[in-house]
Length: 370
Image 1: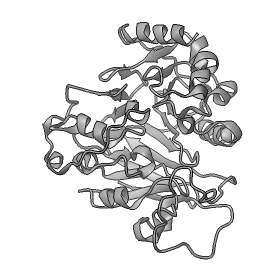
Image 2: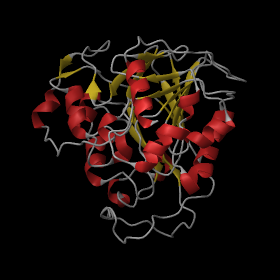
Image 3: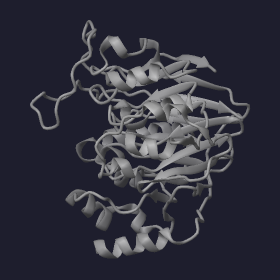
Image 4: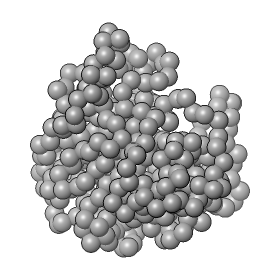
């Protein structure tokens, strides 16, 4: 069965990009693009809803014992947006914190179009089982393997695939194409042969507003995308890659796209490590960084003021540490991260066609316009 799926994905990837689109919306007010950064505990879930009624969800959070929690949080945003279906679902790559909630989500709301980079490049029995027998896209006519340069017809928004399957766009977007001076100081890391490097990344344009979401793309692939010339140009909003981890978020990317605002989809002990935080905070033109969580890996040394942090932990201590906690080695006995299974809050963006936008922390109601 897995071999048949691989063949089907290859065939689909050779077909010209034609996407099904039939937006369904219960209620949407104003002429703004709505963006919800949903807290799925260091996974990734971002919902885009256009004023024309189109919807795009990127990633579905964790599976297993946490599927009900994470999908419940996504559905809360879906209901807040008044959606009756998800027009397009992009799975950036086949890691459990990015696709794990998909099967549960598909039981709660119709998903009309599934988008991914193709089969996993990792030898993982759970992923193979999912792709062979569980993936809801198997039973849907709307399933597309995308390549760089493809577009996703989100009603009212221009969405261009910038990276997919380890490849990057070759032609610059409008406003891109200039030499990237930040490539000169780039330091490559060990080659990433796993799923992170395969991430589907997208650039969104809504009038004069620009946003970028690259999934968990790692630094060598950032270099391949951004060097020697920057095909993206600058953006207004950047959804920070890979939860703010060291293996992503090079200056060759962050400083070149020079976002006005960055949103960090981190967890209490996942992402927000000192290196990427310094890169973000020193990015030219950055006005603010907003975080889904305070991260003990940042400590107070590298984090942002509490006004810009959407979620706390269930057993809130009297004080947070000043120094960042070293990131535990994979498989270590460091113990579980601080728990946040209670009420969750999203960061919401309302972007307007003139390029202005407002960001709101729904935990405390704090908003700021740009």
